Image (cartoon, rainbow, N blue to C red; front, side, top):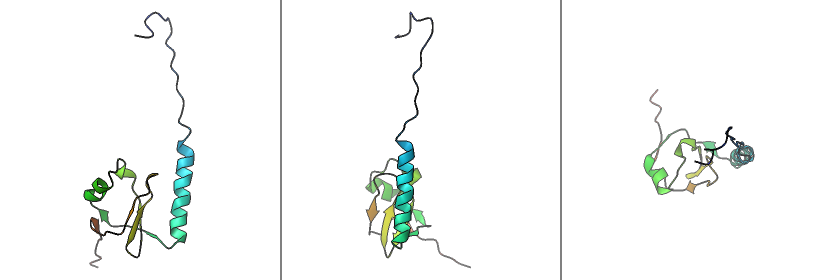
Length: 94
C-alpha cells in the first residue's frame, strides 16, 4: 500500500476540464441541425441501431430527422444513417 507509513493520506482530486466545452459543442451542433431543417425524432429507436454503431452511450442519444436522414448528436461520434430500420414511429390514433 502506498500510504502505509504516512500519518495523513493525501488525495488528489480534480474535475475534468473537457466536459464543459463538449456540452457547448453539442449544443451548437443541435442548433446547426435545426437551422439545416432537421427536427427532433420523437419515435422509439431499437437497440439494434446502437449495436450497429457500437454505441457505448446510447442513453445520451438524441436523434434528428430530415427527409429520411437520421443524425444523432448524443456524443462526439455524431452517427448518421439513411436506413429507417430500427426507427419506430408512434402512430397518432386520436
